[in-house]
Length: 369
Image (tube, rainbow, N blue to C red; front, side, top):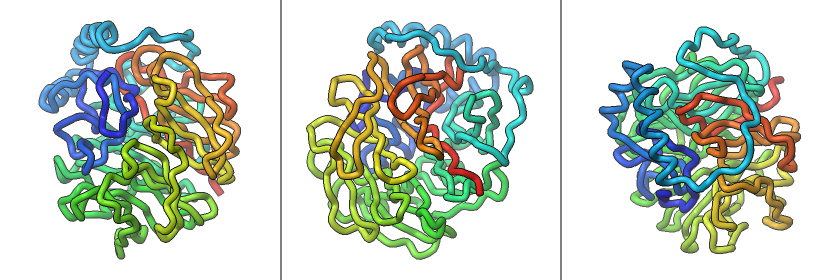
């Protein structure tokens, strides 16, 4: 396995370059890599674009290299295939997406380097809503479920910026334009502001800006890497991950950036922290048992409960709007796919089945008013 700076293994095994591999703005500590350590098997961006032009050829090459990658890098995976709709190269065979209903946004490379997709919660219908040549990643919903904010290299290769669009991909607006690396955007509960991480001051720090990109305000100043901010449902606290204490840990701070507290001070690599809809719990990924598993804890870091238990890499948890389920990414069946489970870790269901593509970073749409 290869590890990124955050110390948590990636779920992906792919011959294509993703936004979390070297050569991208989504690389290095100051650039804030989107994933934790990994099983990534990368190729050059040039080769990736060539494969995109010939999807059939791409899959043949992927099949050969994927088999080799699994033999060389992955531990044995436990568990059976728990289903999920088969997705082949002919996307026209899928059901149309109902943009007025319940959806999960996610990152996928099934059409190329990295795009934002949306799908129905059972995986039966999916659509690429950001189909451009540049790498798009890290989607987050607005509180009303109408918009998706995300990071992209589409206009600035090697330097990520932040964009927002409607759920169907329309009305795209660029929010940052400074030549630096701006990542991990997320909305405040009232939808009026956006949190993000940026290296515009040298080190990666957390900022807040208006939802139109105006009035950026720095919220951390620790001369280390701070990333992946998420505001609590009541707007009173901000979750983020940081290596300010040496290891990658999950922190909470006030909505104004005050009083940061280490919630997972155990020496392991922790990340992918997300609030439950009621703000009472936090789901997260951790390497505390060696491989990467999913856990849940109370908002103050107490009462930690392990949700997954296998030899695979499980990451990127996301709560359903009612808090009864958690979507996540895992390579338990070979490549990185999307799954859902009950909030206690039971009843795991596979949502995607794309053979050799990378599906990750699922984000459940909030309840639509």
